[in-house]
Amino acid sequence: MPDFDAIARAIAAVAKAPHGQPEPVGGGCIHQAFRWGGYFVKANVPEQHPNFLAEATGLREIARTATLRVPEVIAAGRDPRQAFLVLEHFDLRGAGDEAGLGEQLARLHQVTGARYGFGGDNFIGATPQPNDWLDAWPAFFRERRIGHLLGLLGARGIEFPEAATFLARLPELLPSDPPAALLHGDLWGGNKAFLADGTPVVFDPAVHHGDPECDLAMTALFGGFGRRFHEAYRSLRPAPADVAARHEIYQLYHVLNHALLFGGGYLEQARRILRRYA
Image (cartoon, rainbow, N blue to C red; front, side, top):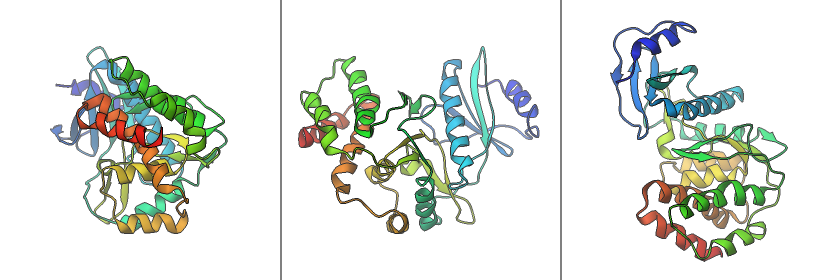
């Protein structure tokens, strides 16, 4: 169990001390999670401290845009026994203002940079995600995304014969200079919810600047985003002509990550996408 006395001291140093007893909550597959009064606490071994710091950085980056609602970061820390992250607690629901979520995501994507990447590396789930800046989008997606994961899989003896041809083709398959939009980065259905009044909330980001269609591709990979969401988003950011192929190529990144984490059918799904575009 986490050292809640140490976590309480960290909270009290910057905010109102928690009341009551921590209550375990489900939903996470990496960390232990608890509700503690008005706070949501994640805890894990000390080695997970970089993961928590990266999550806190991403949440603050999205919060600064005043577009999508995210939980406020209260505290993050590490001691010899544990690492922890304390966030604002929300009473969340599965349904709400889907159109508002689409509009707010489109507004997040209006926050752009001059290059592709981010000011620090972070994580996509449990997998390290490199974000060193690059000027060309196909090069960024080739080197920092697909090539990175192919390297991690290769270190486990998992090879894809079509990979080299696919990587070489990316400059012709992807736009050279889409808007370098600020992305959530891991926007599947489990990372969004709604407050009691319907307000959308997103969490667990893997932020970076990239093609806004990356976030849209992720929303379509596992479902959970309805017609009203997509219509509202497209009313502000119409779909590009090559949207179907572009989405499948962007989904490959997440399929490869799931192949790395879980194996199984994700390996064959990745092979099918690589063959289709190699």
